[in-house]
Length: 152
Image (cartoon, rainbow, N blue to C red):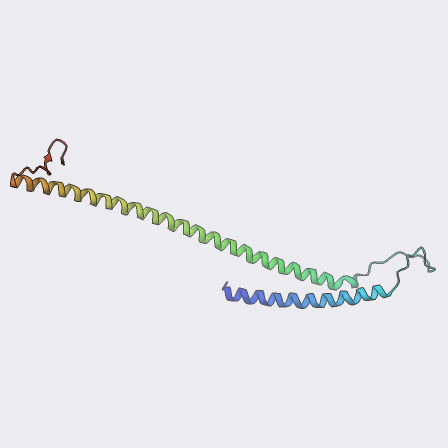
């Protein structure tokens, strides 16, 4: 999902949420005003015959719709988070694989560099020994030690 599409979906969901919040708050505030205006008299103290209180489902219909809407929004957010976690996990595993490949390549380059350096050092020693043997010169600073295969 494109990040622009995701932002548009989030903006649209926010607008819907705000409009539902506004309508919900308007309905509840008018209802609470109505309840405040009426005086509640407990059934035992009233002159009316006592009867069982019946639950009026219509009063809570809008609240239930609003809660369903919130639940749907949370479900959508949860799905988006799940997809994001899966994407991040996949990206992390790809990065780890690339890191291992880079480490392997670096180790190979290091080994090759060491081999080249060693070969150059041996070649230099060989060339210096050949030059000294050809010239039959023993210099005080540079002398070849054949036992240790080194120059001193």
